[in-house]
Amino acid sequence: MRMIGFSTGALAYADYRLGVAMLQGKAVDAIELSALRQPELAPLCEGVDALDLTQFAYVAVHAPSSVRRDDEPQVVEALAGLAERGWNIVHHPDAIHDFSLWARLGERLLIENMDKRKPIGRTAAELADAFQRLPHASFCFDIGHARQVDPTMTVAYFLLKEFGSKLKQLHVSEVNSRSTHDRLSYASVLAFREVADMVPEEVPLILETPVPENRIIDEIRIAAAAMNAAGQELATAGD
Amino acid sequence: MNALHSPLFQLEGRLGVKWQHLRAAKERSIGKRSELLKAIRRIDSDDVSVVVFGSLARDEFTEQSDIDWTLLVDGGVDPQHLSLAARIEAVIAELADKPVGREGTFGNLAFSHELVHQIGGQGDSNQNTTRRILLLLESVAVGRSDAYDRVLKAILSRYLLEDRGFVSGSGSQHVPRFLFNDFARYWWTMAVDFAHKQRTRFGQGAAIRNLKLRMSRKLIYISGMLTCFGCALYKKDDFGECPNSRRTAECVECLRQKLNATPLEIVADTFLRFPHLNATALKLISSYDAFLGILATPEARARLDKIQEVDYAADPVYQEARALSHEFRAALLELFFDEVSGLSELTKMYGVF
Image (cartoon, rainbow over all chains, first blue to last red; front, side, top):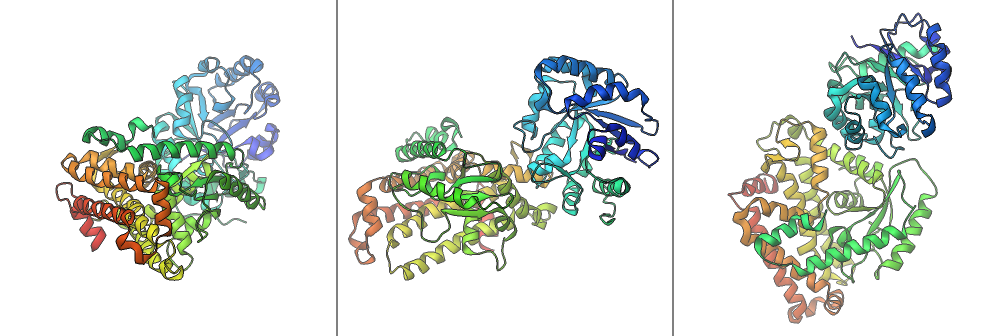
């Protein structure tokens, strides 16, 4: 059974405590603590000991999507402290200025493929550069980004073919034409199924879809069906 | 594609010839596309691509060529798209001596949804079919190609995913039949439209259209045929073993890359794989090179643009071009009915019955 959970950023924007609280008591065993904006990282590091994360078998942290060059050493230092807890650190390749700083995170660093707004990291060919500079880094496959770049899922296929052996986490959402995350549509579920068999069951799935608390379980059910290689019945009802 | 790596010029080396008109046309095409790129800067975006077709896309541009173009839209609706098209039209008018064709196939907006969803059926107009097939076989995005790439992949994906025999590998040959049939339909549509235009335009421009049908239109078609047949003929390519062991996504990408080449490069690539057809290659491409030489000569081109049917028999330029088209056809028949390469079997099975 795949571990599935949510990004706190999708549920509660910058309020990671609220995001955690929204998932508590629900049948959710994975979580990604979001510090997508750089000023959110320090509060997260300071408050993390106070969080009750016992229900989550898998915990990851999303690093800031934009890091000031001068602050990069401090950001890496802070993230390394979180990685020492055994948590994976998801990061955008376009947010890296000095690759050598990030090498210390080893395989705990998960490089994510980008959406179509970004000039790099969208395809296997573009992402290869980041992995060449960080050969020990792992891969976070954002299937919503890959579908936005190429709805035929050809780009998704080649990302998984090229970096499947490094795959440690999956990001799932619908990424709309304005490049914002949206709830999963039937079309995205059908598209995701094109490559579902290439994502092993042990790879945790983190949803980035913005849903209210009472829709969390519905959304998890739909994501699970979308990424079920065996072709589980699609369950798009719920509204 | 780098000129040195072009299969066309590799073939030149093998055959010990120099196709000077093709070389000159390629240089002109690159130069003209570069001018266009500078002139349209910032018109393109992630959602729209400026796409050129015809001789400019095929690397066969002459000073007498027009510039066929369209603004390909694959994104949210925006009233400003029309203003972008108007801007491109003004730019093209400065860069080309001749206006685009009368049919409205080019020089306008084209929308991805029609191109991807209307394959066959009542909604697939002549214009839509032509745009779609020419996007696949003779187009180049000048500037940002995000929208262009998405649309091409989506079109190819439809042809392949909905071809049950191709996906399941149930056929005796690994040829994408749905795609092949649409290439063939395009060719026969062009041939029938020639007769229609001859009638409705009272013969005006019929000579040059006839010669283009015999040469450049036919070239487009055969490049499509060879691309489809290549799936069965070439057991190994950049993507590894083929056929049957491959997922459709790989086939989409493989075909996309093959179709990045110009029609003549696709033909030349075929000849490079079959050295026993060297004499055929020489005949086919040399006749095309000579035909391009006629088109690139202003007086000859002007004559072909104006000549009436009653003068065909006595006109030396028309007769020379016609003789070249016969040579071209003879070479094509040798190529497509060659048994050693396996093309003959495929031509009979897919091109006839």
